[in-house]
Length: 226
Figure 1 (cartoon, rainbow, N blue to C red):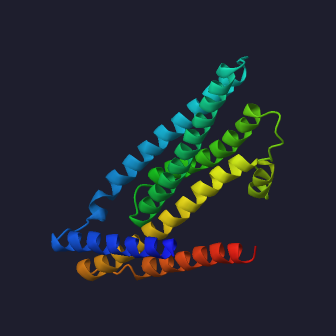
Figure 2 (spheres, rainbow, N blue to C red):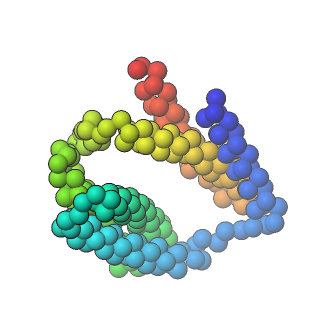
Figure 3 (cartoon, helix red, strand yellow):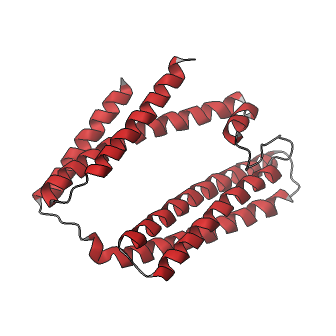
């Protein structure tokens, strides 16, 4: 029931947000700002990629340190935090590069801008594999699966201890609930935006609805069949 309440809350937030925008005669002129928006996303992607490789370098340097006791525990904590920050930065940079490519193609911007963002997307993908490989250096005593393994997720979960699985469970369930709320909000914003701005977002609304149905059905069937 909590998931349903989250979705209803998301719907309310989406409705109120879209209503306020329309009531104030807010009009999004994305086409006029498409080039500038793409440049900003390209710049942010580049900055995040640089941060990712700097984080990878820091992790590698710390691996060679020989510590013991509390210092060793502190180092392991720092390595973990750096890796999670690295993973987040890499995920955001990948998403930004895809969005930038999409905007550039849809608004028919310069070819060089599309090529630059495609190259940045390729770099973010390579960076994600490098980051996972570096994790093996941090935990050499653990049989971590290869980044290219098709069952990477299952194998990683299998070698995790109960504490790690509990942390994963909390994070994933919280993400699942937030995803329902945000996607439901997005649907209502798109519906009211389509009505008020006379720009049909029907395809996006249907697509988000399908994604919500698939994700919720997948989750419920998974826990039902256990």
